[in-house]
Amino acid sequence: MSRVIVITSGKGGVGKTTTAINLGVAINYLGEDVLVIDGNLSTPNIGIHLNSPEVPVNLNHLLNKKSNVFETVYEHESGIKIIPASLSIKELNKLKPERVKDFKEDFKKICDYVLVDSAAGLGEEARSIIEMADELIIVTNPEMPAITDALKTIKLAEKSKKPVIGVIMTRVRKNKIEMRPEIVKEMLEVPILGMIPEDINIQKSISMKDAVAHIMPKSKSARAYKEIASKITGIEYDSKKDKPTIWARIFNRN
Image (cartoon, rainbow, N blue to C red):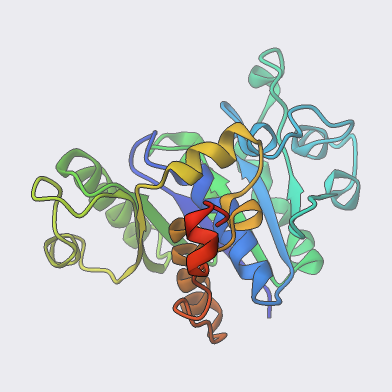
């Protein structure tokens, strides 16, 4: 049965869009069909991240009843399918985010896993996308403001009766300043699905307008996303066997 998983966060700038894309690519790497939808209608970034900033037909056309679901789907070279949203400011006043959930069953017919990148925060747009979820994943950083906002999001999920699979912590440096995983887990009372290390390869992949899990599949961050994908799908993945060889590391071919 297909699953709709909304990727959300209590605050912006924590790596939510990067996580939605790379988790999608990682799940696809394990052999599953994946659709990534840009549910952040006010400030969409999926298309920008994947070098498709403007496409002929997008999610906005679907919401305005100017296209059908299948016309909005594009296949990225990484193997995932995407539905970008429009960058047009003029369309913002016309949009009704609550309509997205009306197409939920159609989305589920396309792929095994439907990942939806929601707007950050707890505003009306984010809540509308959360309403369409079968499950939620919270993205946060290991710092108190982000963790506090993540907790608010979890409380909202509980109120909406939406199960939270767990939390993904990004930009992890493992220094003495950031919050330790056990403390975060105790505060949020949900599983930690994984920790994505601070990795220059992520910045490189964004600059190259692609997913790090696609163009640098053996990098630390890419393998971390694959480990999380393994937990979500139940498909076995051995990160140690996927490490780059010593020669690849020497020549920085990760």
